[in-house]
Image 1 (tube, helix red, strand yellow):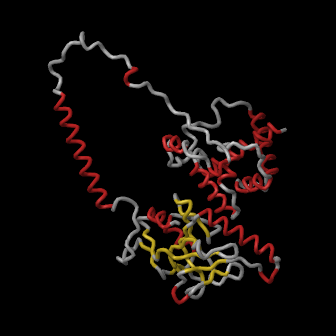
Image 2 (image 1 turned 120 degrees about the vertical axis):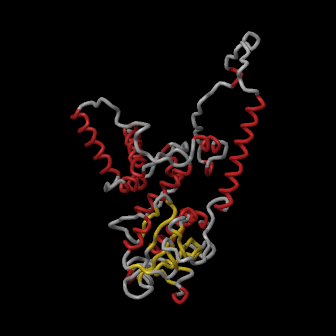
Image 3 (image 1 turned 45 degrees about the horizontal axis):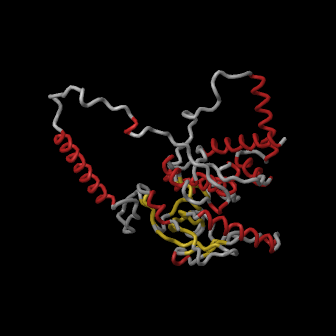
Length: 358
């Protein structure tokens, strides 16, 4: 039974990788997956737990039922038992259909997204101590190449002299010229870009590709489509494509459950968020536990929020009030304080948002 359960967990891991379009290879992949799980289910599974489940960190501990249930729910099942039942049904269907000529999975054509971390970067990480000393990280397999001196060299004394070959100094001259050209181009490019992803100037240049403080939108779809997002549900919270730790947030001002309070005269330079049950339906212990869990989750997630507040401008419209990040100094286990760190978003230069995270 234990062997069968391990096989089922391995299938679950494969299904998770297919669902997010990314293989779990290096540390950053598990941070990414943890963020994706939280964005969809609003439940937190730490990257360390995921590493143990995938075998990235060695551990004898068995995964909790609640962890398996949550991952199965992420895949659209009612829980772990429902997922196992679907696996059994797939197995019976495959046995009825008979064997296939080609393997089901292909390493080179499975459509997985490159995590952006190369094998070389993983090799360099291997020298670091693993997170929380919970296990040793398995080093990446590296290709072995023979050193130049291992290659068979021709006998230079017996080789004929090629009188038509160019002189060595000419080759060096061409290399020097090529290196100089590359250096000049690099300097010019750095001069234009400022040396990397920099925060654009907050001066208003009137560009239509810039969303500005106080700009209003009739519906969530009106601003989501500017970021290439076409969603039908969970419109109040969507991840920015290619930026898993940046979200588009559409909260309700003075929400009865979440509050979302602040100085409206200044368009909320800070937003205070805390959960309370309506009409005192939940006891104080549950309220405290929920706010405590949210503080830990968002502190670890280090999320950036592009915020469109509903009800601040009157009516049902949404107003862009800036880019926010968690104010760790003024947040605690009872409430979250979000601080505005930028009052405009340049749609043509979204990579700079990563510079604004804590």
